[in-house]
Length: 356
Image 1 (spheres, one colour):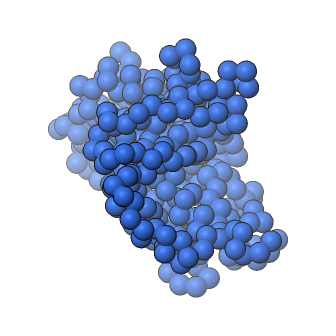
Image 2 (cartoon, rainbow, N blue to C red; image 1 turned 90 degrees about the vertical axis):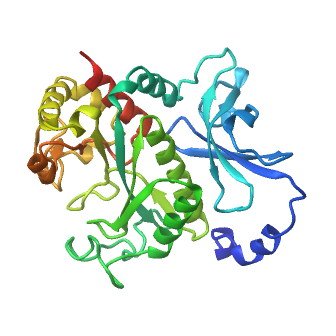
Image 3 (cartoon, rainbow, N blue to C red; image 1 turned 180 degrees about the vertical axis):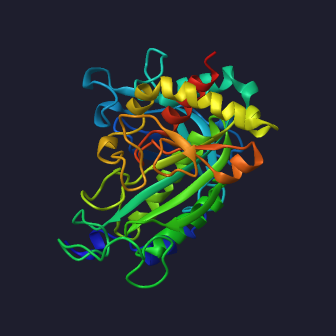
């Protein structure tokens, strides 16, 4: 396979990207498919838009994305959020959409709808979230980028927050994604190289309510889109390499008006009891293949047992030491896998903690 078929020829593309659009706007409609992947297609608009209310509903062939049967394949796209487009620039936009069936009900894979309803019902509790998205960079052969072909690099140790050749890989992709997120208005709060070589993390948040899921999904779309231009694959597999290598998670930081207030540690401790009572339900929506990651080793808790503690990275939930010292703040749910849906994570957290 020649290089030109796997890597975008950006230099040639840019000659055309600078052409006048004659007042029209390109809107990239983005949605989530049946297996937690991003899909998108482009609509031409006659003028600049500033609100989702100005955008038309659209549709797609759901039978080609695993979201509808072939004999009733139309699935509708309802815009819910817009972002400046860091690839096309100008007035062009990215449009995040919910998926709806022709009978007017949410599509089976539309997890945003239920999460948003829970957020609205419990708005007075003012849930804030921050998600830490870990991912692995793969070559076209499916092996971690920069690793010896069919072999392994040196043991974990020098790679976490590493600097230098042989310690980190694909920093160019990471930096490009960071800047694309900033341009798009994603509340990306940082990046770092992770414990396993060729694995990275970025953080999004704090974001209130449903905005957390919206921004995390759009940041994933941007990551896949940036990596296209470098011929590198993005994997959200929670255990991409078996054995003595760290897995990949989506650590979820949570606070409410009660935990942020004076004496908030009491609220946090009360929440832990609620989490423990619904541990199995949470694990069920915290990502596919998570049993290979949550082994009680490699900075994880056991998938079969709920636990929490101050500064404990081997627990289901970690309470930061500074929070314990201040007596208020937030906590980190370390159970979600890197491939989990942020709508399902934030939705079940709100449901569990708001349950009287």
